Picture 1 (tube, helix red, strand yellow):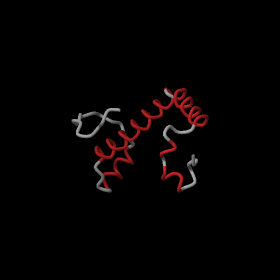
Picture 2 (cartoon, helix red, strand yellow):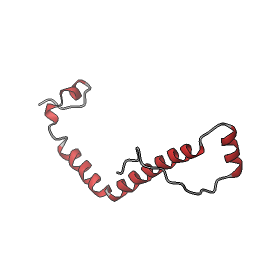
Picture 3 (cartoon, rainbow, N blue to C red):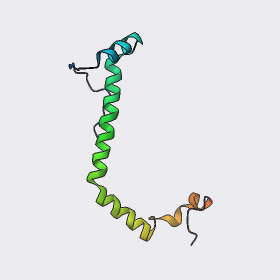
Length: 89
């Protein structure tokens, strides 16, 4: 996924609810920064939602294999045994 850190800003026009915009300004909010932050979060959420959808068959296959065969190298996971999560061999 593309990182959004330090990307240049680009001027754009938005249509916003006038009452919400007025209240945000009264509250001293930086509207541009707030919209930028919220939009970036939504883009990331939708990106990963799409990624999960596109890869659901591979994820299901991997989960089935782990359920059937266990985790690779599980016998070396001493920390999980302490929690009752590992099998002793």
